[in-house]
Length: 510
Image (cartoon, rainbow, N blue to C red; front, side, top):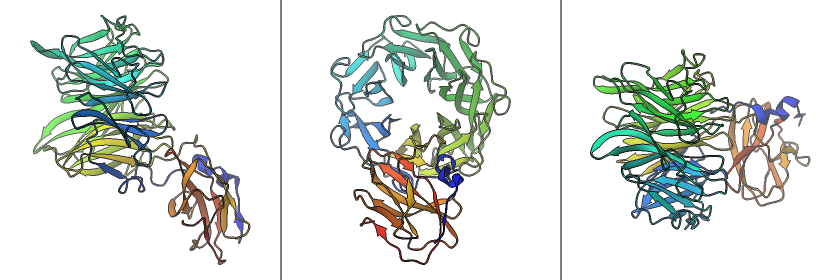
């Protein structure tokens, strides 16, 4: 058998284009969808490459933690479930520098819960792990972010029962859960602009510590509203018009659901645009704007500052992700005018706002989730894969987690290297690695389009593989490795020519 080496293939695993970008990861759950019986109220990918979701179980806020492969983390709480005494839903999740999981909750007051990485409440935070503040109005928390100094910032909607005109608020807490009364007025900032009572308030913290909130202004057509605050809670009058930017895409309703700042100071805001009634259904399109750091529209982005993505039903972007290659991932949902036939959707754009047609089907992907659903969060795993969490309604399951391939970044780290297996001309071998739990052998006819051909359990120091039915001509092989903490990586690529020699797989079972 002839062995073919080339510098190109040696380093291909750093830069190859994944053939199934935008398609479900078939070995996750049921062909890319993990269904569970617990409602998903919020989702967060944690730095250790696990993901945490919040749910109400037996009337109490409960966190559930999974490995990246969808398996429950039995070392968290009680076999994966960490339950509190709090009786309301967790709306947003963040993680602290010391590994705690911070949950923002509450529909009347602002409430924070801090769980240790083991799943128990942190008794040094607030009152035995729970901090709650009543500002005398109705506050509904909708987002949470942590500053670099460990302070916790939350945002949401607030109104007075005697005058139910909804406005956006910001509040800040110290790392121990106590209210930071130096922020705004006694810890609270209320934006004076009246916003959509059914809308969403989202938060992003700039690299310089300034705070951005995004929501939907309630005016004649409903428009995107972005406001920026200094670190002390005062409005930043150098941003937009005295601290506020209102952007309209159409004369019909435009609704903001996500905001994100980039390292260069520019800002992305996404949601839905051109919401109108087209009989017999409501119809809206996924919409994203890009702004310069001063709040002006970046007209080099998309079509004069915005990109509009049309699906075949009413659609909205609920989250903005930036992958390791700088691409923009929008995740969200679509449904018809009755809320039936709901699906999770996502699209990938270049940093310039152009739809990437190599992703999914012409830049888009749609996954049917049944009668109705609501996407509650999304995140990127270390290998650039996309994870989405959604609540399901009127189905046999209460939530679904979806994972999609997104190509490997050029920053991909190889933790296993394959090499020629000298004793068998048509095989290869690799060194034992105690951080790997399993290997999947993948084969390609061209070094780009790979499919899985065998799964090999780890734990045996003799790691070898030979293909029982190689393709005619050249065969390209790589290993997909899953570490003990659920992270997925890929080996280098080895090119060989098919041989009629005998073959075998080791270790057994394979």
